[in-house]
Image 1 (cartoon, rainbow, N blue to C red):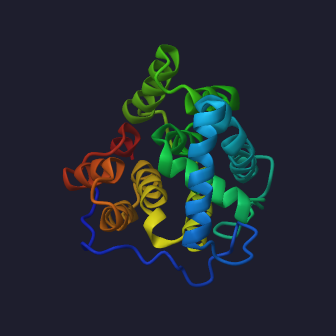
Image 2 (cartoon, rainbow, N blue to C red):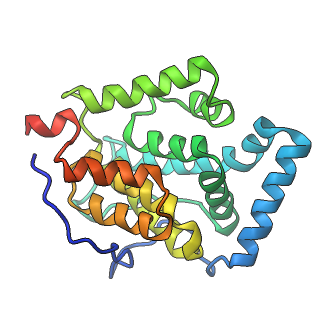
Image 3 (cartoon, rainbow, N blue to C red):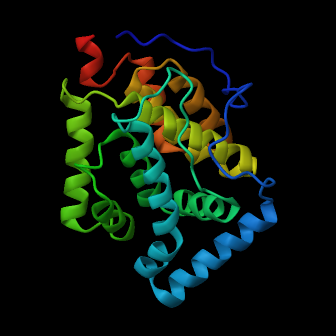
Length: 237
């Protein structure tokens, strides 16, 4: 599947008519985010990184994964373009998720992997273990293998419903948080779109880089799209 070059401008994520997947009760302020980050960093120092990651991320990650599983459930009849799994990410859960994916790349990566890899191969215990201890050899090797398989195996095709649900939830998170914290969510969206073979990957990556020009994940997606490199499954269609 060829990748068409997108216009070099940030994506307009406020899609008209897009159904919200989060419990939206007012946007999160910069002050709230700063306080949440300070609490996260303080807890890391006092309780240790592993314990802090568990207390901050376990609940929102599992809510996120429940929504992904519901979206991809083949036993549920979904009307094309109309299904949106309910997601219980309230303001507190969104703040915790945003803190996590901005302060630790391992947390960002588990949200990404959970969207593109079936839970049978990347279960919750592994994802939490990686979030807490990304440098542990077995965790790093397994994540690398999951990413390699998803990229190189032509049979590793996206679960479009699962990916769409992840993108919808990330856009809803973006709608709730201050602009300065949106780079990593946009970067994850860009990777998922690239994995799906969607043209919007470039625009989302540019949106991330417009906020943080050091966002490596977004830069990787931009490079891949510019060079017309896609996952193996796209060459089989």
